[in-house]
View 1 (cartoon, helix red, strand yellow):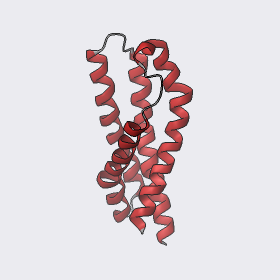
View 2: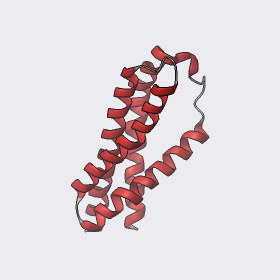
View 3: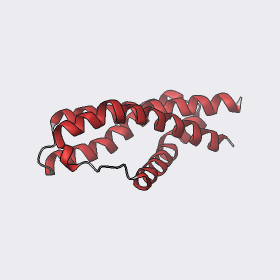
View 4: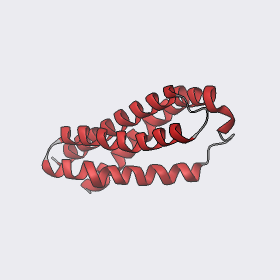
Length: 133
């Protein structure tokens, strides 16, 4: 049960925060620099696959070990590292290979992925730990 609470709390927070950031900051930034590359409609299936697997990876690699160790701050820092690796891979690869990929896009998305992953992992551990008491 604790694992289910951990996954759901992390996923809800991750999705909620990301939806706000994507609509208010990331999409306008990407439209300004590479708008011609953006799909007219969001491909929900692809987005769902990413979110389901990414959150599962965060749980497996970061949150579950931190929860078992009783170390929520471990989830914050390790989640931030994982977020920087994942979002950095995407952003720096695109910056290296795609014309028009702007440094502001790299910096904004890299910082966001780092903070989002760390905070989501940390909060999920706090919630799952509180419910288990």
